[in-house]
Length: 238
Image (tube, rainbow, N blue to C red):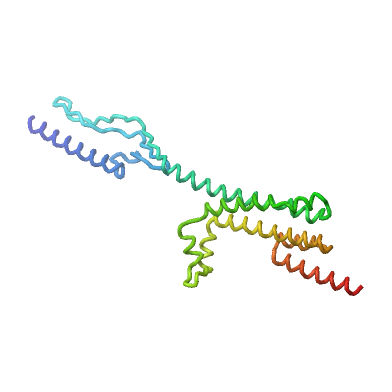
């Protein structure tokens, strides 16, 4: 009877040791198939309803396994949340600036094309406020996209000249691409305004040139130069 009791105690001690080792490994190998001991998601770690296992010993009833349920614990990870929120915010800023920057310049082109002789059009296009507002937006996007390696990419060669592969890699960033797009919108609108004002001064039609400045600024400028030359030749022949 004493030998049987010692044998039961040894079996109980071995079983208890195995269960503790299994729990110490974080649920990687559970003695109870189908029960996950813990799980992790990007922003919080959740310990599901794990059970604390103990062994009760009795000379009369023998050894038995006791499962004690534990309270579910949720451990937040605020640092990871802040990082993800920051990334989402930067991406949203770039996307919003890209969309609204495109929409904002369209009314100015509409005025120059649809009502070029209007006093309102002349007054609006004489103002520098739209360009200042777009320049501020461009500066903010440039600040968001700037990294310590930006200058190394721009001045990549020993002659301090940029290289195409490095520039392509830099413009793969959404914030950098949005800042470049705002840069193009500002330059195109400024060139279209110069074409428009020069047309009013020299009494040359500029609607087609202004429209081309919106689509392709260099082509619009070239078209305006050709139009002025043709008008000068036509007037000289008369």
